[in-house]
Amino acid sequence: MDDRAQLLAWIEADRDRLVGFLSGFLKAKSPNPPGDTSEAVAFIRRFLDGEKVPYRLVDPQPTMANIVGTFEGAAPGRHLVLNGHIDVFPVGDETWTHGPWSGAVADGRIWGRGACDMKAGTTASIWTYAYLHRLKHRLKGKLTLTAVSDEETFGPWGARYLMDNVPEVLGDCCLNGEPSSPYTIRFGEKAPLWLAITVTTKGAHGAYTHATPSATRIAARIIGELEALEQITIEAPHNVASALTQAKDAIDKAQGKGAAAIIQKLTLNVGRIEGGLKVNMIPGSCRFEVDIRLPVGATKEQVMAEVNKVMARHPEARLEEINSQPPSWCDPYGDMVEIIQKNVVGLGREKPQPIVSLGGTDARLWRLRNIPAYVYGPKPTNMGSADEHVEIEEFLHIVRTHVLSAYDYLTR
Image (spheres, rainbow, N blue to C red):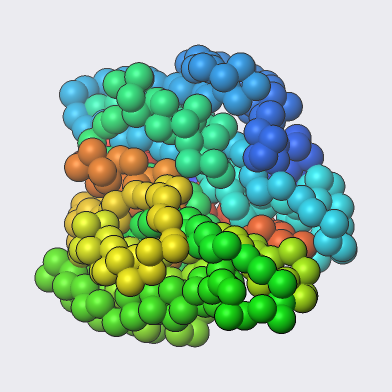
């Protein structure tokens, strides 16, 4: 039996163990905020200890530890990094068919908060690391596992900390299992530019409209003027534009109808607005927060030049930047894309297309260091809402794809 057949045989023999691992992983609560992942980290450590694979904790924030493991192959070669996160969205008061921390296995699915975002993908990384350790004498180069605890709040104690302080996590390529759908491989992502605008006026009794401008009406005018940002023309690098054109149908299939139309457009969402005290008072203050998403090819400077023109017309308003990241991308036709595509087709599924993600992942941190990083994971089914789940067969497909692709990368 050759190595690839052996890997698939191990996965098939471990089918119940894999499902049981993800179920138990979901039962180990790790909502962020508040961000305490101790229970989930301990769960992963028990598995890695049982597999007798090398790893260590990197825990600048003790309740949000990161697991980092590395081993060398038998010959020199490339360095592949596996990345996944342990923390998940918090749970509100929504009603679940199965409890959010149940890890229930029912109806061909595994249910719970984090099932698709992203404990299924992180499970694929963890088991890929364990399986390939058994074959390390056949590999070239190095394999590193990074299971991080602070992705949902942009990673100051997670991947960002590792990138700045643990050089072994950099590597030559990164493979990530965030929810993306098996129809696509994400080679880039749009980036957030979050702004807060506060409008301040004198305020007055609601009948005295002659006495003061209304902060809420000024805010409404500013919001209307900011909508023009969506008309900015963004030029993507040629190979990005061609990849997205070819993947139009796959983009809509993976991210919902209409996604292809906005993937290379700047978008604007007013996520929060607060102003006024009482219906018969002219508001003296209004604050709103804007989420602008920058496509590949856009720059913060390009957008802020237009925002500042709007602000100049409204002296009552003050601008504050909450958060910003540059868009990230790598080669849509890179070596790992070819490897993943070949394995997915070999496993009997349609060839996934390289696309850009609408949302953000830790993969951007590798791309921003000029390290190719690719995302291949399950569908984002009910991600961040009630009844989040992953289909068992899809979960096992993601595991098989990650295991085979990591093996191929480290044996070429």
